[in-house]
Image (tube, rainbow, N blue to C red):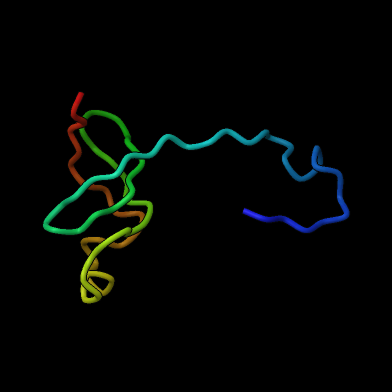
Length: 72
């Protein structure tokens, strides 16, 4: 991310910047980036590799919560 501002960075990032832990998951042939939540659930962040019609499927919309069991 690139940010052009004349404000000091401390004012821009008042809360501090902590990177969000994400994982890549393939579900029904769609590779997506997800943010793990609690107890086997994850929120879709973005689609990485999929057929174009998958972008129109509300099941794969960013923000949707899916079932996710991480592999160790």
